[in-house]
Image (tube, rainbow, N blue to C red; front, top):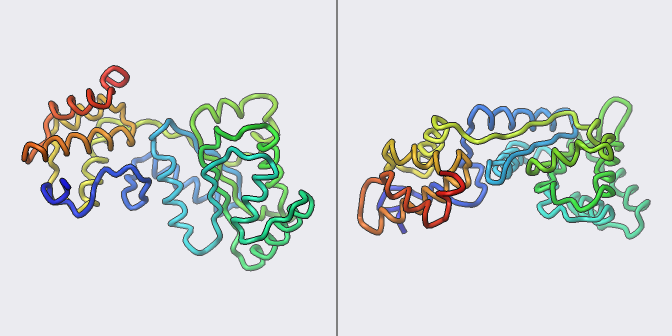
Length: 270
């Protein structure tokens, strides 16, 4: 559509969490490093951030870096009962889940020990973990960390969610789980300088040889989006489409303002 007009090989501001487009700001680099360390240590880790802050893209980048070295079980719909959680993990490990809980736990433990002997301890990533419906499911997650030998755990568990997840885990009822969390990180919004670098990075990855956004347009994108990557993507794509429709080579602040109005962002982030 507009890609050829601006000299892109692909769309630079897509909505899918493509790790190839990950912009490693200082905080995103730090978050990814902590997640990688959690995998090395087979620890329980927590990553929180606002909607659209890049959490899911980071999880996909982590999966890419883990590669084939160990199995990754990714749960993207965590509205699960304790039994459903265990069955999902068992299925993710290639097992046919047993019906009874004790048998299911035995299956998982046996598989974890096999993977340990092969030096391929698995990673369980639970995205949107703020949607976990009950304390009982959180308790089951805590009990997963009991799969261990004398000197190490047999799997990594990573909880990813919005800030309310962290608030929920502060309650007394979750003290036992909270104490098991070995690594945690909270993602914030991008600064103006990081927003500009983010835009330029994604244009380069998309094959663009020049940046069609002028300086005022990028400043407007930051002001309206609040530095949230998903909102940056939405504004940038709409502004590019607007420029393409008028055969313009450059995106100015006015086109960004029009995009903000179209998406009703000007009041929330202006």
